[in-house]
Amino acid sequence: MRGMPLPIYGDGSNLRSYLHCEDVAEAFDVVVLHRGDQVGHVYNIAAAKGRGVVDVARDICGILGVDAEKVIRFMEDRPFNDQRYFLDGEKMRRLGYVFTSHPGVSCVFYYMTIDCRTHTKRTTRSSKCASS
Image 1: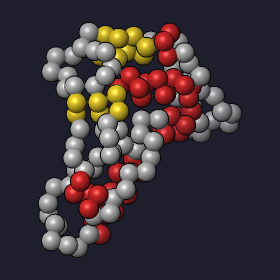
Image 2 (image 1 turned 180 degrees about the vertical axis):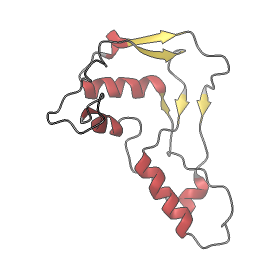
Image 3 (image 1 turned 90 degrees about the vertical axis):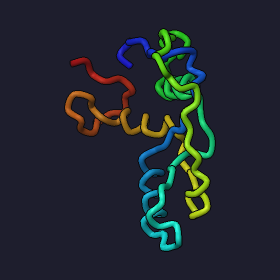
């Protein structure tokens, strides 16, 4: 995190449906391979439950070994920032879609292995990006 504060708008209690790209790809497979009477309909890809923005931020800080209380800065809330932004994924679940990832944190491990300047794989594991 390069010693920079982690801004969170409002108090961070806003709920979101966090998904990992692998879950989205799997959900696409479920929809594309489905041949029932629901073809052509809208399918919401959503986690089974929402998570608070501040909870995800704390999880990420924990993975990086950063003290969340020292880096999280609560900012004035954005205008029209929804308290709860969550889709109903029941139609996907009826097709057999099962949400499996740990939303909001699993991609952190990927970024820990990438050199931020060159976007290439690091030779050593480090949670810090080199400064530009």
